[in-house]
Length: 439
Ligand code: C5P
Ligand code: C5P
Picture 1 (cartoon, rainbow, N blue to C red):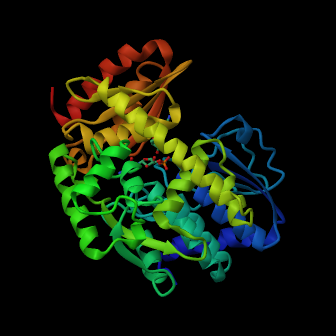
Picture 2 (cartoon, rainbow, N blue to C red):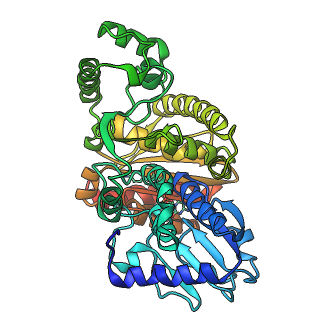
């Protein structure tokens, strides 16, 4: 049994009863790694109960969700906790979310956001955590959805620095069935491909450079074509030592090192590691194939190969984007600015530059210009200790120009009207200056 406080446990019981009673559910989930994993968990749990459902993925609370009639109970996963006023909760709404929210819960809404019950939704539980707890409340034999829970936690980077809070309790509770080992965080057909495709960590000169990665391994006396799983312990140690030196040279942020060797789960029954599942699910979501992980898990056998292909294509595009964005970055007093050509790569570009390329003294803001401008910002734990709160900074600066934004102190985003970029950046620079004091 995973111990959570009584009040929280009773809410899961309430949700379980609604699910048991009703026969059809309208499910909406977010399109990112956590959203896709959370959706898989909830959809498979409903399928096992022979319940009908209609699952859709959204980038945010869009019109589709707001138009729902309320004829069937609605499940909202990873889409925020405030239920838009357009949604009629007549038949009930279950919220599987972990974002910050304010205000009381509306009538007819079962809010399972861990923040409501005293848990930290940034480090200790994400939407996949909440979905997994619900699936276990429905039926303890749903424990085999654990790989999707792990994929979601990794997708939201809640594993960085080790699992904590509810996530750690689940990992501890499941350790009889699923064990992790400390291992290299690379996957691919060979170790050289693993390093070449690595973004976390990102190795300047090796990531995105297959020849460079092969040469690096040859210099260590290691066969570049060797599969990661066949490497001897002494070979792994040599790789870790050299790559650590490489990260020191790059002046990587402290948490940037934590992903070189981490708790690795190998899920033999699905033929994927936890990190791999997380990357595959995230790539499927970001390529508009959000339902693919769920259909694969439910038996669509070609799904794995398709996800692998999507991952590899998206990864190469991301590596190219990071290289370009870094080369053309601009520096403000209180942040680095980068532009991206694909809105799906804004977060990963900002994050990689932050942890591995800009020496960590100020946050990174990535912008995607279209009809409006999309913003993604990333910081480090050290910057948080200096007072950084990107959610507040981006929110305040975006609102000052008629946009909006929010998220977490360490990772936040927003949108502003296209022609307001300059005033937004000016205001953001001021707010960040007040927070981290570089002004
Ligand atoms: O929408 P949501 O809150 O789930 O998204 C959180 C985002 O923040 C994810 O893209 C996750 O990878 C990112 N993140 C990050 N660094 C952290 C924590 C989260 O880049 N330390
Ligand atoms: O899009 P990105 O991955 O950069 O989002 C980082 C965090 O900011 C996520 O938690 C996301 O939900 C949040 N966000 C937000 N409002 C926006 C855009 C992003 O709260 N307009």
